[in-house]
Length: 150
Image 1 (tube, one colour):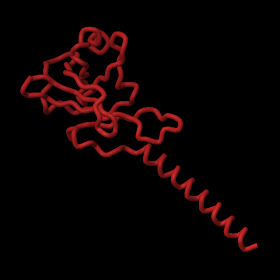
Image 2 (cartoon, helix red, strand yellow; image 1 turned 135 degrees about the vertical axis):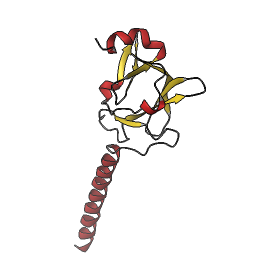
Image 3 (tube, helix red, strand yellow; image 1 turned 90 degrees about the vertical axis):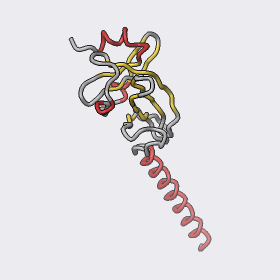
Image 4 (cartoon, helix red, strand yellow; image 1 turned 180 degrees about the vertical axis):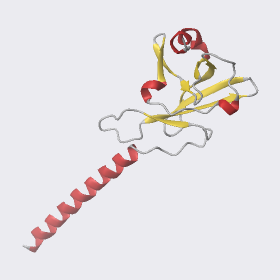
C-alpha cells in the first residue's frame, strides 16, 4: 500500500514539474529579450505573431544609426540573439538625406508595419518618432509612392 502512495506522489511531482516548465518557457518566449550588445541602445524590439509549439522569443530587433564615415543612414534587423537577418543603407521617403543622428528615434511598430513589399520580396522599413519613414535605399523609388505623404 505504501509503495502505491510513493508512485502516486512521484506522478504528481512529475506533472507539476512538467507544467511549471511549460509555463516558465511560455512566459520567457513572450517577454522582451535583452538587447544584444552588438546593437545600439536605440534599438527597438518588434514582436512577431506567436507560432504554435515555438517557445523561443519571437520578433526582431530593429536598429538605425548614421554612418558618419559614409554619410548614410544604416538599419539592421536582427533576431533575439542579435544575428542579423537584414542590413542595408536606408533613405527617408521625403526630406533630407541622411537623417541626422539626433532624429533617429525609432517608433515602436507591430510586425505588420515593419514589412513592405518591394518587388518579389518583403523588406523591413523603419518608422521614426517624428513621422519620417526610412526605407532601403535600393527600394526607394518604388516605396516612395506608397509612403510619401499625399
